[in-house]
Amino acid sequence: MRKTAIKNCCAVLSIIAAIAFLFSIAPSEAAVADYGVALPPSEQHRPIVVDSRFEIDVLVNGRSLQEYHARGKSYVEAIAGAEYEVRIRNPLPYRIAVALSVDGLNSIDARRTSAWTASKWVIEPYGTIHIGGWQMSSERARRFYFTTERESYASKLGQTSNLGLISAVFFREIRPIRVPIAPPPRPHPRYEEDGARSRKKSEAPTASADAQRAANERSDSIAPVPDDESAATGIGRSVRNDVSWVNMDLDSRPAAEVTLRYEYYPALVRLGILPRQYDRPDSLRRREGATGFEDRRFSPEP
Image (cartoon, rainbow, N blue to C red; front, top):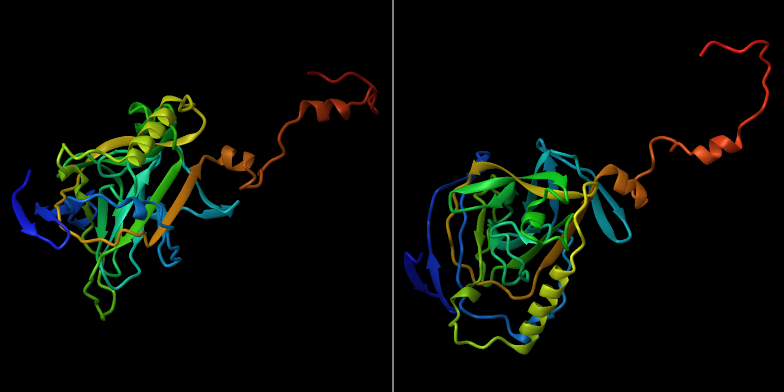
């Protein structure tokens, strides 16, 4: 609901303000901005600039899960039934916006979109935020927790093509105000979204957009059947998380993208990411080592 409209060099933006508390852990605030303009086709395929200063961590009970690197990917071991949160840092002296998806769903509105059109969390200069669940309204969220594919939130929504993946795409704010001081304490988390929804309904979508949408629909229609062995994220208990909306003018080119795969221990072993901690029983090997006699005088009691 629009409360106030202001002019921006990019578009007309709406602001909704509220005081917030993120999952009853720390004070937080969130914001959403409507750009009112779509990303030009020439910008849609610009390569992501990799900036190693950006990072995310998965925390269980406040402790970061160890990361394992293999095949050019980063993995963490999921803990069945455990609630978790994603810690995101901003290493820059100005605000950034980050699109965070879990199992292919936006953590704010559970939609499947591009990173540019996605709703985004806003992080203050040198700030760190903790995102611990799906945002269900301006006042409430539901916690992330590790579960099976079949019991996952994405499975309940019929979106099972991207399970086991946490992805964060970072965007810089245009004309930021630099902060030449030491990093402040943990800031209020915020989120914003672009104004593609505010475009006129009469505006015709581009052919490339139609093709991409059709491809996504085909992909979802042939998504694999969820199983009870692989890790995914469920929608857990309800917690208080008030959010507010702010307007931001973002650089259309992502500053960085960080992706984490999460799997249960047996899957990490099968992938060769973790070593097996015990010798797997092999009946054929046991039978191959069988002998007919041993030095025993009488039959033992069973």
